[in-house]
Amino acid sequence: MNPRTRLVLDQLSALADPDKAPATQAYMKTDMPFFGVQTKPRRLVATQAARDYPVADLQEYEHALRELWDQPQRECKYVALDLARRFESFIVSAALPIYEHFSVGRPHYACPRPGAHSQRAGR
Image (cartoon, rainbow, N blue to C red; front, side, top):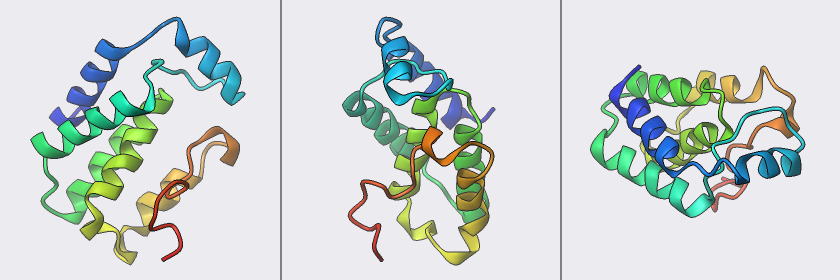
């Protein structure tokens, strides 16, 4: 596991609210586990990960996103999407395999949608 993913998991674990996790899971109607971390602190974790571990190239970008996305907790998937937006210079056609990875393997309603709340969703 790379240091970026370790940082994200450690931070999300430290922020975890075990009382909120089951309620969030029920609200989202999914069996996917949650840490119970709200949006604002989760985004701060993504900001720290991006700052502490910048991405150098497309291969590292794809690896970083895939490793986070493949974690079982939903918040890790959200952090992967947060990082994808932060490193926007890598949002190129050559990165399509990672975005395809985001969209297969689980029903669409069980996973966050890339760009669902992004200002850039229509470009």
